[in-house]
Image (cartoon, rainbow over all chains, first blue to last red; front, top):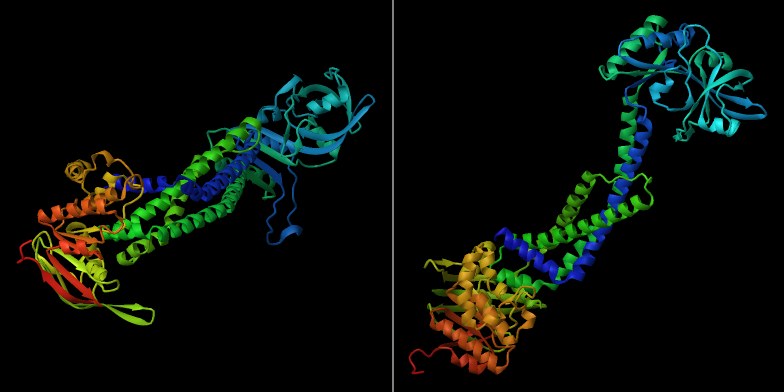
Length: 398
Length: 234
C-alpha cells in the first residue's frame, strides 16, 4: 500500500464521524492543554526567579567570613579573623576586578526634624552604585574612600526620602541615623523590591562608619564583580590565594554567582518537570479514552474488518490502518489542546502581562510527540485484536 | 483448477459438534458456472468460505490453481499467504454488499488495487472500463448510502473483479434485492462467467440455482447431488 493511500484511508475514517472523533480527541486535548499551561507556568516562574537573581550580572563572587567546614582540631586552635575593609581593598587591586563592594548591613532609626523612620542601613563602598547599576535620582553617591575615616555622608532610598522629606529637597540637609549626624548627598531612584526585600526603604552610608555604628569588627560580605576576560573559577582562585595570604588560613567562604544560579536553575527545572508530570495524568486519561473508543470501534466495525481481510488486506496493513487512526485522533487532540493553550496564554498576556508564564517551544513539540505516542500505545491492543480476527468470524458479525 | 479431496470441517455449536463439511470431494474446471444449494445449516456457506480461503478445513486437501497456472495445496498455507492469494485470485460478492461506508463507489471498487499498492494512474485505467460496464458512471462519486441496493451490489461486483481473478464466489448475491435489480446482478455475473471467470453461487433461490450449468445440493455437510447440465440442450 502506498503511504498516500494509507493516509487517505486513515483520514477518511476519522472524518466520517466528526463528532465522535472530536469527542475521542477531547481527552488528549485537555491533557495537552494542562501540560502546556503547567510547563509554561513553571518556565515562567523559573525565568522570573532567575531574572531576579541575575539582574546584577553573573560575574560576581561573594566573600563571606567564616568557614562552615569542620576541621580536625577545630575551634580551639583556629581563630576566625574578620573580613576587614583592608581585605576588601586588597581584593579590589586584583587583576580583572571591575568593582569591589564591601557590605555591612543593619537597621536603625533615621530622623529628620520631627519625622523618624526605622529603616535598613547599608554600609557600603562607593563602587556599589556602578557595580549594581542603581541609578541616582539626584545628587551623588558616596565618594571614594581615601584611606582615612569617611565623611558622614548618607544617600537615601526613594521611599525613605519621601517619608522623611515629603516634597522638600533633602540634598545638603542633615539627618540623624542611629543618633549620628549625616549629611544627605544623594537620593536613589526607585528600584522596587527584590524577593520581598524593599530596595527603596534603605539608607546608604560609608562602610567604615557603618562598622562603628553597628559596633562590628568585620564586614558581612564582600562582592567582587570581575571582567569577562577571566572565568569565575580562576577569579575565585585568585581571591582565595589573596585572602589565605592575608589571613594565613581559610576562614572565609566564596560563593560564585553562577554556582548559585546553577543550583537554583536545576531546582526550578525539576519543579517544572514535576508539575508537567502532574499534568500528564490527564494525558493518561485521554489515552484511556482513545483505547476505549478504538476497542468498541473494532467491535462495531468487525464486518468491515472481515471484508478487508477477505479482499486480501494483510495483517500488517490492518494493524497500520487502525494504529494510524488512533494516532491521528490523538494527534488532533494534541493540536487542539495546543491551540487552546496558546489562546489561554495569549489572553493571559493581554490581560495580565506581568504574570510569569512563558511557553517553551520544546515543551510544545514534546507535547505533540507525546500525544502521537499516546495514540500509538493506546491503539496497539485494539489494532492488534483487529488484525487477529478470523475473517469468517468477523464477516458473520453484522 | 479446483480440486477438493476428503475435506472435513467440524464446529462446536453449544455442546454439540456439527459436521459442516463431511468428506467433501469436488473438482471444478476453469470457467464453470456452479450453484450450491441446500437448506440452512447444510454447510454450503462453509464450503464457499473454504473455497474462498476464508476458512480452513480440519483435514483434507484443497488444490487451487493461481493465475500463474500453478496448483497449490492451500490447507497448510500461512494466513498471510492466504490473504495474498485471496487478493490476487479470488473475488467475493456478499448478500449484504459489505461496502466501506465512508468511501465512494469508485474508491470501494479500487480498494483491492490500493491494498496491492498500485499507483493511481494505473488504477484509473483499470477502473474506468469497469465503472462503464457496471453502468455506474453517474454514481462513481457517491457514498454507498446514496446508492440503491442494486447499485451497491454492482459496486461490490466491481470490487470483486477489479483484480481480474479466476474465481468469483457469490453468497446469496440477490438476497437483499428486489427481483428487478436481482435479475440485473445475475445477468452481470453470468456475463463475467461468459468471459471466462469461474462463478460459484450459493443460494436458497431455486430459480437462481437452476440457471447454473452445474448444480450442487448439500445436506448435513454432504454433497448429495452434483448435476451437470453440460450435455442437455439449454
